[in-house]
Length: 177
Image (cartoon, rainbow, N blue to C red; front, side):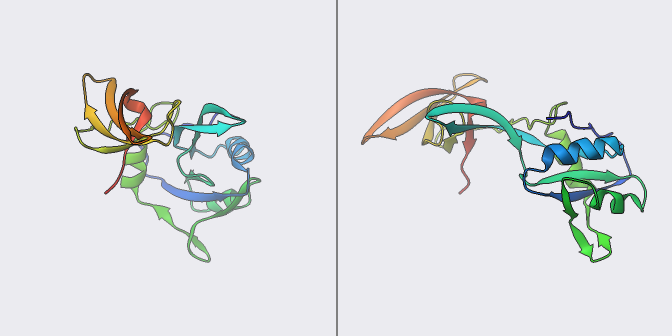
């Protein structure tokens, strides 16, 4: 997959959301890069099951969409006609909807230099969490203890018994509610 263009963070230019054609991310990034259009595709690490194996990969945080920056008013028409891009999210039929600067800034601040989301969520004992990578992917448990900054002990219910397991912090996600 082509390297994404890393946007300039200090910008007054508007950012827009482009909806992609099916499997169009690589094509859209290639063509937008050729047109010298800045793009931003926040990514996260996920573990999936493939052929009875667990595979960890980077995937877009918003599948089927990417952020593009228009440096002038007429550029969005060029973006809208780019191979791989289905359409820009529009406010009216003739005007694209800009993304609020605070949202873009917050997303950029939450990602590292290659666009991968850094999860710095703090956990507390008793929080319900879902394991998002590793051999116990998709298991739900309760935080038992937090011995250090890298590890979390989680209690999982397996076959009617509570099992305590050690999990890296970046491998769990707090469940809402």
